[in-house]
Structures are given as C-alpha cells and as structure tokens.
Length: 206
Image (tube, rainbow, N blue to C red):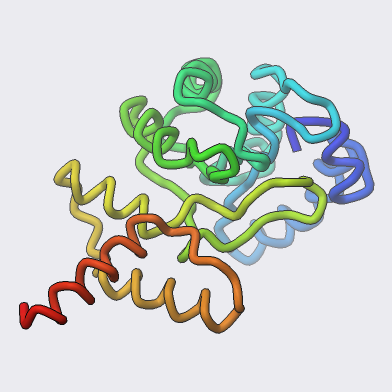
C-alpha cells in the first residue's frame, strides 16, 4: 500500500514491514526463476488517510522493483482518481521507474475507470488489469466497487484501433453468465449494451 492506514487495515502491518515480509518471498522466487509482478494499492487516495502523496507511491514501487519485480501495477483501490491526477502521477513515477515497467489497476467507484485507462494509454502505459463484469472489490476499502470491467476496457481499445486478440462478445456473454450465477448486477456497461443490441438484432432476424 502507498498509504500507511490501508496497509495497517488490509494486511495488519506498516508499509516498511510489508516490504520486509516480501523479502523472503522474493528471494525464493528469484532462486526458482519465477517472475514477480508487484502491486501498489491506494495510489490516488486512501479510505483511512485521504490524499496519498505521489512520492509515497513512487517509494513503494521502487521498493518492489528492488525486490526483483519485473512490473509494478499501480492500483486506484477506491476508484477516486481522475484522468488529470493519473496523468500527473504517471509523469512523476516515470522519472524514477520506466513506463514499460508500469501497469495500471483501476476501480470504477466514481465511474472514472475507462477515462483513467485512456489517460494512461496516452501516457504510454500498455498493460491494464480489469475484471469481467466489473467483479472485485475489497472489504477494507469501504464503498469501493469492483475493477474496471474488461468489456468496457476492450470496447475502448477496439474503438481506438488497438488489437487485443480478445473476442469482446464472448467476454460480454461470460460477464452476463457470471453476474447471473453470483446474483449480482453486471457492472460492464459495454457488455450489457452489446448483448442488448444483439438480442434486438436477433429479434428482427439480423
């Protein structure tokens, strides 16, 4: 975690202690030639501490790189980040860690997930975490929604002419299926719209 409060609530230790805990794991992975990907949470705000300083985000990311992580995923755990804030954060962190080592992880609590993906793309980031139907969340991040929906991200990317190799309709159907199976609302706006359009098209013999 980039914030002390979230680290204490989420994993019951300080940020410094969390890095020390990971040292044995990192050494074991390195000994076995297992690639490691690191995560930094609460990059744009914390449910306990409020605003999070970009320097704190960068420091935790650098600590994970020092442990041997090939990539660091920066997570807006409570989904408060906006495009301008994310741009500035990437600009700041990239002075210390190359952009090709950065990935982004957005939650859609305030409906900014797709906008933040676009802002990050324009900053040269090309790796993003997402979840089918917007599943996810965290019990220690009160009010936070799930991750930005894979369907919405892929719809954006395809609209930009970016090849993903992903069958968007197959993902949309999967999102619908898992949402019904779990008895929860499907948070993928693009997924729901595509399925509704397909249903309408089928009804008219399209």
